[in-house]
Image 1 (cartoon, rainbow, N blue to C red):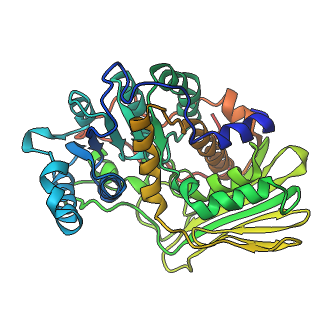
Image 2 (cartoon, one colour):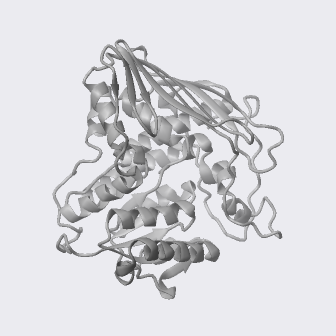
Image 3 (cartoon, rainbow, N blue to C red):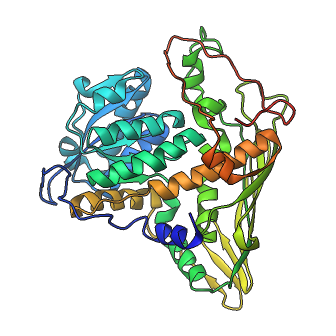
Length: 432
């Protein structure tokens, strides 16, 4: 994708792609009608997503839940129910429509959820499942909220771009991805000012995110499970490459997405490095990843992320231009240079704003489509991760066109085994 196309696609990410009835396939309900919502993936972020959806629009019905593990579905039921009791008690019976018969468990819980009459399905499962589950939702004629990342390997990236984006457009379905910082008004204004030339031509960017903890997951792990059990790895999904895509794809995607939005282009080449503390007992991913990306016209992006216990947390994104510096964060945005500027604080949480955009697109009959921008950011994170694993300098086109790396197992059983992969190092890791 060239720069002009990339910028135009980014700018239109929240716009309508085509005019359709409020719901696809002729349901044509009025804008005041209830939107029926189902959730697949009842962990902390999935539970939070339902609460965000309720805050965004109380004229919804939550009708079904799906998860691999019963205790997570039970916890979600309790927590969301209590949340409605605290904030919207008079609407409890109208919003919460989940019954024991509409709580579905197991690896195939999404298939059962898709048999309900939900209008929107929120996908907040371990990232390895996201691409496949988006496809299932679209084939079932469901609108989708897909938490980031939506792909964690090159095979999934090509699936999103070549098949799923055209499918969603053809069916007139909304797919909104969880890169929620694009819905923060201060960040939107900062990008507008950058596009208007307030810092001149972009020269380079530095994007760092350091965490004070190596994340593994929040599910309680039964003592009888071993690390090579599939269930063990799914309960601790953040610790494994095949389930999470590593931190550069799973968490750092938020920061990288903002950097790419500001630069307005896709990189052409990457070199990386990474490592892992020897005392980390769990998982097969790295605890730190770093990459340098090069773009056309000489623009460079220095990127790095770290999750290590006891380290200092730190996050920064700085866009350097010929006339100034744009310093971006998850709070206020600042421009230093010929035309200084400081943003106002965000008036409404972006986690609510993204769902207002999703529900608004459905009620207005103007589907929203953000898979392209999210997938492209995921792809750049994937390229950075692979370059870090292999310690190599690689053309990004190789990952896009030739890499056959696929993390999704051909078959998966909850009571099965999966060998732990060796920690990637430049001497042992092979790009495929």
